[in-house]
Image (cartoon, rainbow, N blue to C red; front, side, top):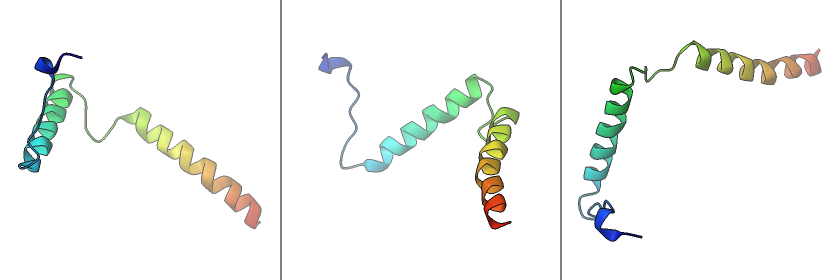
Length: 62
């Protein structure tokens, strides 16, 4: 492993890591034109997963 190309963060200034990470994540979403809140595919999956939980529960209770 090449240690010259390894990124290291200071253990003293722990907030620097989180600021850098947050900046890179925000840039990724901005450059790829992606919403951070998700799209229709995510909402559909959430509804399906919630239904997979709720429907059997309702059937058991009835």
